[in-house]
Each structure stands twice: as C-alpha cells, then as structure tokens.
Length: 208
Ligand code: MG
Image (tube, rainbow, N blue to C red; front, top):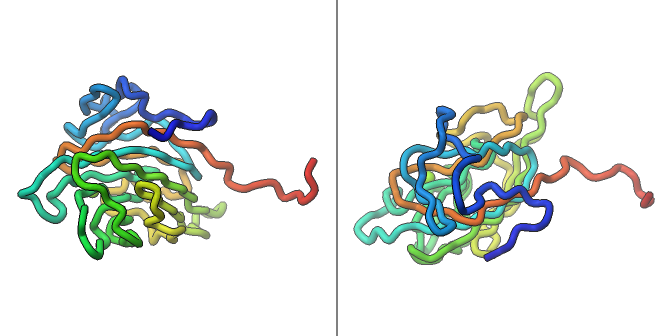
C-alpha cells in the first residue's frame, strides 16, 4: 500500500468515519472493518475541504457477474463534491466510455482501460487544480484534473466542463470535500489521504 507522505491529511484512518458526514450532515453510516469502509447508505463527505490537491485512495468493486453497465459495481469519487471520477467494474472493456470506470462522468472517457478485475484493490491518484474565480464570482479558469489508475495515466490534465451530475453545488470557487458515492453496490475504500497544494509558487527567480 502506498504510504501517505508526511504533509498528508489522512481522510480515512481505517478505524472510524468520525470525520465523514452524510449529505444531510448526519454521521456517516458506512461500515468500517479491518481498515476498509464499505458503502451502506447514502453518499459520504469528508469534513476536510480543499482547493488544489493531490489525492490518493484505493477502491475495490464487488463481483457482480450477472450485472452489466452502470449496475455493475457502481460508486464514484467526487472531487470537491463536484466532479465525479466514476468507479465501476469496467474490467476488460475494450474501449471504455464516458460512463466507465476512470471517466470524468459524462465528460471524459479514460485514455486507456487500466481496470483490474472485481475484488482486486485498485488505486486512484488524482492531481486536481480547482477552478479560478474572479472578484465578481465569474469562472475565469475551469477546474483541471489528472488521474492515474493503478499507476497508469487515464486522465491527462483535462479541462472540466463544470460540475458533473449529482454535484453538491456549483460554487466552484469555494473549497469542497471529497465525496464518495452510494450507488447501491457494495464498493469498498481504504487508505484515503490528500495533500493540500499551494495555488501557485513564488514569483521570484533567484532563490532567497
Ligand atoms: Mg458512479
């Protein structure tokens, strides 16, 4: 398992969901066992909110051999609660689409199919650049995202068109949480952490 760097914020400690909430603000009800959380009832949101960020998490989809399409191991990782990276059992699909695992839901299909079979642990490493908003509240730069699935680049700095369906809000200039989706399937997550990124580096050339 990929260990969090020293400056990481651990979003899931493997023991409880004390720093996660449901959409209505009530405590999260997913089950936690052996360092793993399992989807039970309702989406859950991290208390931690962020703008630009590097996020790592691991997920495992259940084995649902009878199920197909969007009914097969569906969940999702909403960055800032606004942009869903699809979680689905898309193993073996030749040309994954905009609804498949690793897609920015209904905006960008993954570049390649990097999926492992059901029941195997997989990882997402997400580099997220939040939307930039001016003093009038107008979006001057859309959010961007790079995603690695199991170490393979599946999204290469895509410019997001805006929040995906099911977003918590459209206040893209505000910090947002990590949201994990309940789509009715027993998807599991573990080892979730993030690093807050500065919005920009220094404007000096010479080192000080
Ligand atoms: Mg989903």
